Length: 328
Image (cartoon, rainbow, N blue to C red; front, side, top):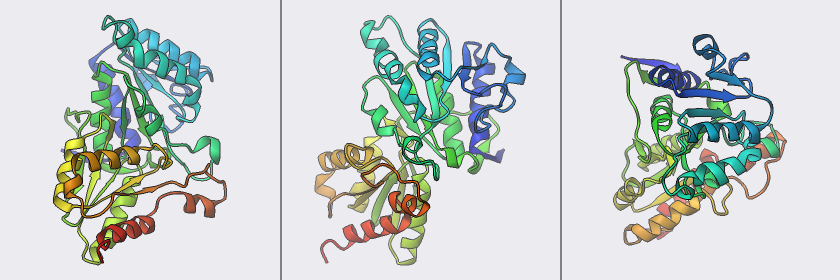
């Protein structure tokens, strides 16, 4: 039976179910225990699992990320919560130089089954240092898997898969979407890593995105439908490994592609997708691939500038019409 629950509840269920299933799983991070999580994702978990498995840490991302990596190398399965991926910059040495390279540097003798999780991207008027989107940063590093979700069903299923995976995983959420609701079944299920999902079928244009930009994609698709333009909307869900096959098959059908990506345009996720499509589906394209990104600058504080900075439905519709009518 499916229930309507919030994204934060779906993530909590995933972590709690995996902690009940496997005593090696534990959660650590700033305010995850006594305060029930900065965004209440871990609400009630301290009461159930106790302070040895739900652990409040000092404000020291490099330190507690390192403890997590060491624990993973020695047989445990840590979930390390960052209050925001902006703060995780301090822990990149552990994520990029240690976790990502454990398997290769040990010639396969050690794995590092760890999940680094927390919100990525803008969250209103939080200004430059608290509003960066890190999916492309982490996906650039071999050895890391990168998941970025906003749908509660996908988020729960992929979190469970991530906790069970033998590789280090960066699980990117959204601070402003924790109250997002959706249908989540009561029974056991997982969602496979590395598989995109066609959320809406269409025939005229493929729109690809992930995380909270999926809301922009759906809003644009709704408006385009009123004008007789049928948009196929794909949620990447996993950034690395990227599901090339689903994207290529969609473009073979629609012959056009617009990518919405909250990352900055230079060397972002959208740039990789545009390259992959021109490499594997060039003969099927009737127009160039267009990207709708955040502005190539640090995020301003003023609300009017925040609105101008981010992708929005109007920008997506403009891009779609460009590729639809490229030949007149």
